[in-house]
Image (cartoon, rainbow, N blue to C red):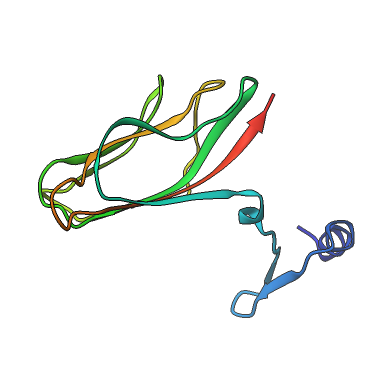
Length: 137
């Protein structure tokens, strides 16, 4: 992309142009995370298809990042759309945390995000972070 086009984009979007000093390439710095919402929760009980994020009719959830951590050592944590199925899994007998980044997983219209996982033993916790946007159509 030419410098002239980048300068015009900078004026139009009122953003900063960044330069890589090693290869002299430029890019427009854009904050895509500023439009995202974040859901976080520490779970200390048993959840079965428990709704975490709901949307209205005419809206869709789009998941971009998921982080799940647990100190439990048995079972699994399942993060799903209500109907469309799997978003993320953590198999706690093998791993204690998992990160899914830079993804785009779209729900169906009006579909919620649900969790199934057991942190009901004394001292067990599940920590969950979901970065998402809600699209209207």
